[in-house]
Image 1 (cartoon, one colour):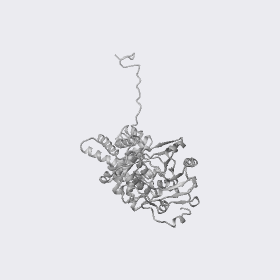
Image 2: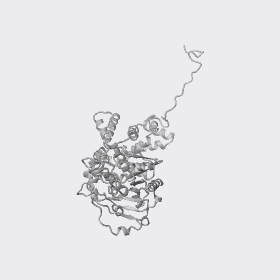
Image 3: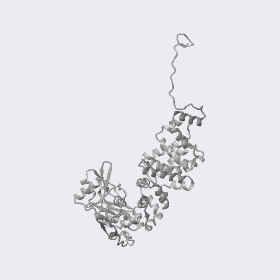
Image 4: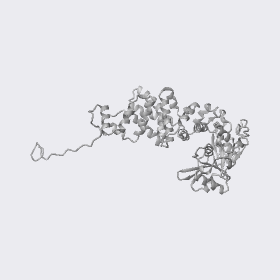
Length: 471
């Protein structure tokens, strides 16, 4: 896989197990650098975005160090097509902003620069240093639990490498000579297909609990094993995710489930106790309803299939599947208390969404279509008269129909309704009329499609008078 790596891998040495020393809560060891020259690796600039190369060269020509770092280097070494291109440099955000008019500084907790080329955004970060006791809180701040609230201390590339999360992400592609700088034995871990945190796992998870989600995401995406020390604290520390703003967790959920390995991700999240933190009501419903887990799993399988086929997917459908079992449990309880089905589901929907918003944000552009899909589940069984045609013409019909099939396949409801709607969509006018007649009991061959009402013409001659006027 890695041309010429054998000479580098002949001396494996000690893995850097304590880059953040356990003796000192913020202590760092000196990293061991391996420089892999261009003629000993297969990573080519042809793999990289032209815009990413523009950013690298402009920084380099301005006298700054400039590296591609993280996932794009990792994926290139694994033979995968890199997608996201992150740049690390010794230039400060203000210096980067000066070099690129098409850029803006974002973030407060971590200040980074987005350089925009049309729809493509190249993320540029300044080398991060080690927070010290003498740092102003404007630059570095931690909570009592160790959570990094602000981290804008600039440093060297060595310090930046130690601040990366996983060894396989601490790989830097140097635009100056096209070499790869491996600071944390990441190449060995790539070959071993192992995901290993840099430093003490508990300390690193407390600094940023989202690293637990990243561990699961990379393990599923890359088909890597999580190293035992890296996975050991996750189950216990999972509740730390409750410290993370719901808006950030929404973005992480999209990364988790829209990367093409949603089903495997779901399995790992549940194994490590993380799914219950992200979707508590869904986890509770899985324990109470046998159909809940198959419904969610089939939705994730369908999501993976659509991504592999490069077809669009929407978080509205994904969240709809995740939250539906818990919402139905609420609705059933309300109905048992005497509330009619439609108001019961509307009330349950609002309650379920309100609870979920305490864990992950759901923007209205997704929550509103999600609720429409749910509401249509009550309309789909009602097919008499004009209703079938009105439902068919609804904007969310196709998504609601797919959702209905999920429910049938999972065993929540008896099969049959999905087949009827399949035939109704595909049938001609005569077939549609036959299906409606079979459902409503109308004479065969008649259609309940809405018709224009014909105006009656007034007859100039009336039985009430020869001149046509009524007496």
